[in-house]
Image: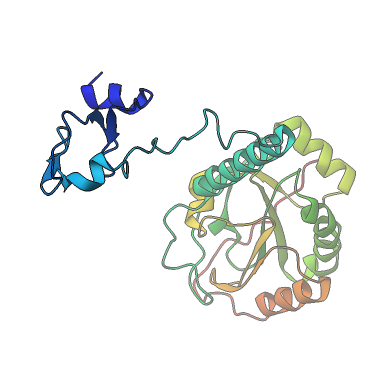
Length: 262
């Protein structure tokens, strides 16, 4: 510990003064007569009038900060703050994982990025194999509340517009196990294929910033609309009609019909 640190923490004696600049305590020494000169602080080198030093102007104690000051907070409040902070960190990390480089082509009228994913029944499904059909590509998760509201609508639309060329495809992005996904699909009466999602596919579609997120792909393989989050049933149906109204490519293409998990 330095001389300054020692003097700062030591009680001030009557024969000492404390430098107002660095608060170092030091002896006054022999009092001069008359007091017309200056006294220099041995710690920081600052000079002060002798009359002030020997007149008692600098005989004050240093400001005191109580040990533990500012710590007397409500423990419950600290717990709440900690929980909120942890939740924000988790959410930020979770979103960061899903917010990879946005593909420039993710725009209306742009081509839908192709992918191949495994379905619940173990088949490999390639998006481009559905060329010639209107595709409703739905990113969702079993724990997603809005997804539970939306899924029955998708089931209804598949049954209503399937004969007109609509193919609903669900991509589960919640990292859930097969059993949980199968249970969800069974309870909801899903009549369209459900695929196991991958981060790379999510990134290809702009990072999937929220669930559910739905892309409406025309018969020519181009995106005609995009809905983020839960929207009204009528709005989803309008987007389906836009996709159905598109023209299939002139070149021969496969219009495979995917079967849902039984």
